[in-house]
Length: 225
Ligand SMILES: C[S@@+](CC[C@H](N)C(=O)[O-])C[C@H]1O[C@@H](n2cnc3c(N)ncnc32)[C@H](O)[C@@H]1O
Image 1: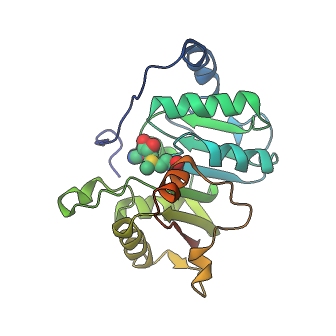
Image 2: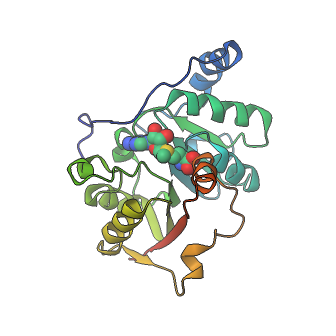
């Protein structure tokens, strides 16, 4: 992947932030922000994390905060260029038991290349922007170069969890990932993709999709060697 030339097509800003949120962003984000280049991931955390997990496009951070609170022994990294989402995660981080989260408030593709091989236990990409039109396909987050990078970073036996509510996105997530030799889909029967995984905390986007009558699916892939 090319480190300095990535086009990000999503939103970076939403409604103006309330004063308290803007202040939190100014004071807390610099403390918990991932550096752009790293030699070693465990060194970035104040405890020695057992496993390290990455969530790409964490939105409001509900899933990431819940996972981090449930696994204090682990380290979590969240990437999200949408600043209102970053502020929301900082609020979860301040309120909850999830001090084991580091945040990258920009395009995830900028930070991955410096990370050591096999440094992650797993990666979550939950309800990515669907970009359903064919001409927008190059904007989709899960491309073969991204899968190459994730295959390098996820250790053998590790998890790549994908979720979507959009029929076009479900197809491309499955097609792209099943054709990559480093990933094997673990589903054995329909309930494996129709039912949420154990301890599923939900996401903001998923809630909206369900309210609007769209059915989510979950696709778990194992990093095979
Ligand atoms: C449809 S939203 C889903 C958010 C959240 N996962 C949820 O389920 O509520 C997709 C998110 O992915 C983020 N995103 C898109 N491209 C990204 C990239 N290259 N790096 C990091 N995040 C990205 C967007 O900013 C957006 O917040």
